[in-house]
Length: 219
Image (cartoon, rainbow, N blue to C red; front, side, top):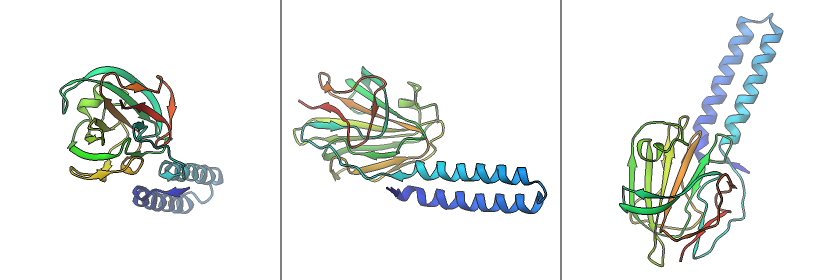
């Protein structure tokens, strides 16, 4: 397991904060052993929490020409027909994956193809499980056209804790299934919009792994 590049700055700032805090406690409360040990323990837990959030575990990826692979770790919170109003402007099958702060937050391309549309939207920071987060929160929208001509839309959505969305793609790029397309920091959600009638291999509340779990099969 390695640490993702998006974590380098955050981890460095966390170490600096912990060092300054512990130095202050040692100087200001030198005689209060119990308080110093409490701060030591909390500092260690903070460091481990930040470190695990940016972990990048080694994985054996699942791939397939007609397979849609889960773009993120987390839990399936939505499987429903809905109106996608930004790009398709018609009904699509929506699958949403909620990522808690303890999940790996790397986002991976669910299919291979060409990026036909990309847009970043500034917005609010509603809780990621709120249905309005899909249209009101800070988010990106990506549409990749599969080699068979089927377009798949996927959307990074910031949550109540997530305050930065990172993406590595742009319109016109050719992307490869399971390669990283972005990262969301500290709690978030990814929505995927598929053509109606697509065979979905997931169930509500199922725990999934990005790059491993098969989300659906394209016709």
